[in-house]
Image (cartoon, rainbow, N blue to C red; front, side, top):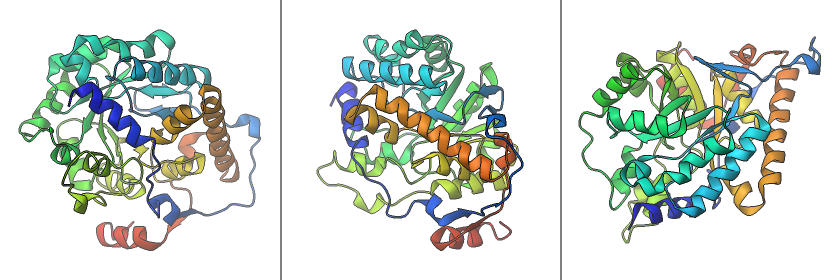
Amino acid sequence: MSRSKRKLEHIRHAISRDELDINSFDEMEIIHQSLTDIHWDDISLQTQLGELTLSSPLFVNAMTGGGGEKTENINRQLAMAAKETGIALAVGSQMSALKDPREKRSYEVVREENPNGIIFANIGSEATLDQAKEAVDMLKADALQIHLNVLQELIMPEGDRDFTNRLQQIEQIVKELDIPVIIKEVGFGVSMESARQLKEVGVSYIDVGGKGGTNFSKVENKRRKQPFSSFNQWGVPTAISVKEVKSVFPECNVIASGGMRNGLDGAKAFVLGANAFGMAGHLLRILMKEDLETLVQEINHIHHEFTIAMMVLGAKDTYMLDGKPHIFTGRTKTWLEQRLPTF
């Protein structure tokens, strides 16, 4: 199967609802505070993600590109929504365009539509330094995502099987690029052990990409004649992954993604120490099943939800959410008790 057709299959599966029965953020409760001393108009959604100043804690996470005119049109509309709402945007993996220049157009359109916006480029961990630079130049990108998708590749019939030297390549790219390099999982979460390894090679931005959203085990299994369905529940849930990363790498700039459904989930991620949160499948479904106007309305609604959470927690700025009183229940509590005894 061509890479372009595979990209379109990923989109088709991503917009079908396949969420967990229990999202990890459902097993986290923020403790309500009855008194607040701030005015709604004084609340700022601006957030600092390391070197990047974002006007919103929310951004459109990596999804699409490399599927010809169909993904070009999707990316164009996502860029239009990002521009109108003032949020950052990440494109899907640019590896297809690096291997086939005819696919560049499906990515370049985001910068054309949003010339002054914050845009993240995206490559796989197999990419070389030269390919990383080319991906960044293609979009005049403000940051680069390098996605980690070992399990997806192993289940993918035509996926990679050689993962030697990946960490060394990441280290080289981090050292050589003069923009933030974000290491991103694709739905299986980042553990404390992986966070330590990334810290050792100079990484300072991690998008946990946790279990809870688009399940690429299931996506790739649907493409197999004999699926490896035993891995369909594999991964570190998003809320837990944020806690694991911050426990061993407290200074890390953490992005929460993977099953983020609303502004309250985003606020909970900030309480755990995240600096931004990304949505992919949820926003893509709205665009594909409704229209651009509805997508813009949903982004504004998410902003409103996030602002309400800030208001009731007495936080005028997003960083003030960090550490607000909260509890965990269920499997999330059990996990954290075993992995982080002092959580």
